[in-house]
Amino acid sequence: MLSTRILQQAAEGDAQARADVIQAAYDNLRRIAAGRMATDRQDHTLTSTALVHEVSLKLLEDDRLPTSGRKAFFAYVSTAMRNFLIDYTRTRRRQKRGGDRMKFSFDEAIVACTEQSDDLIALDEALIALSEVDSRKAQLVETRHFGGLSNSEIADALDISLATVKRDWTVAKAWLLHALRNDGSAEMPDRS
Image: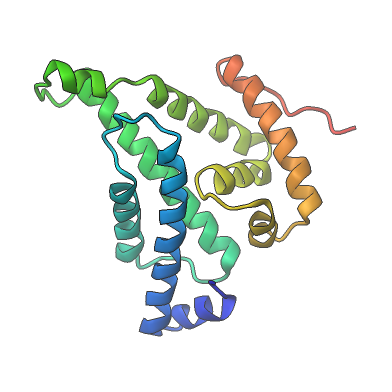
């Protein structure tokens, strides 16, 4: 379990505490990646292990790893996962369209199918729009979808009540669904 104390020790330069923070991130990422990849296409070219390793390497290389508290840390990990998946998707798209002039066999071209990639890019764009309207709801979606946190973990990480998490999740889902159906344009539903 990642505690604020360990994060503070890591911020103060304790090498073992930083290793513990990275290990906690790695374990969390493994759980998230396994869940995400289980529902993904079977012929996906990105394995859950590769996903975890890539994001973990980013965490290891970053000297600015937030250690001020669980909220900042889990928000950072969720954003790192989101950014990697979006970058990976965009790279695969460019490759499919000949952006790097690599040759693909017919089988590789089928594997590079972008149906889910388009969904991920659309979700990213909708999340960017949502963050402009209500940043907390966007962060909640990011920590839940990309960070794999449960409602109670989100409540702790964002320092809000469990009831607020549930209410915000319901509103955010409706907003995102509306935005995705309308090419990213949506307004926040009235809360009255």
